[in-house]
Image (cartoon, rainbow, N blue to C red; front, top):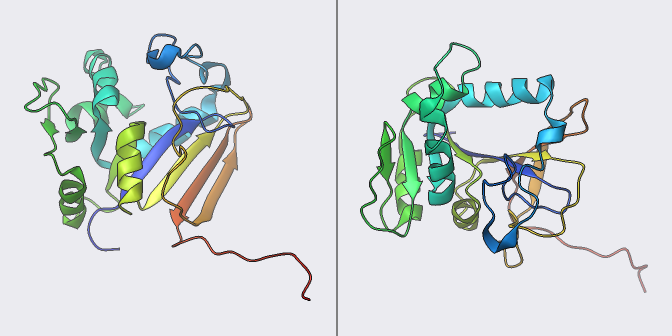
Length: 214
């Protein structure tokens, strides 16, 4: 694969909700009452997988809401050698999608994408990574991820699927999402019951029928 791949990492309930996984007040928009729903399932294996993925970061593609959530927390976390999450987020480039013009982005190495985020991300993808295996990573950022999914710019989807149904909230693939076939390339189950599924796009869906031939 030429250039730098774009990967998506996100947490999903069984019914596809991705809103506010980290804490009660993270994102209460729409009256969302389930903030912090992933916390009971965190375990050592989960932490190891997250750390491995962050180590592959070349830069981060973030929607405005996710950026604000991260920027309110990670700059205040020391940068120990391990785990690498704070170190990677604080040091690497962060590209922010927002409809607000000329944002003031005070978190180190942050830059706002222009109005045509699809074109800008396509240009970023064309650059060669600074180190082998480097990725442009999307974390959360549902609306932005949907835009890039529709444009065919996501090369790998890494989904933490939790054994819980929430019934309400923002979904990664809401009605109207671009139909896409996926190829499963890796699957892991943690002791707490999180299934970690890695998919790559495989073109358009194909169709058939189980009905007996006439």
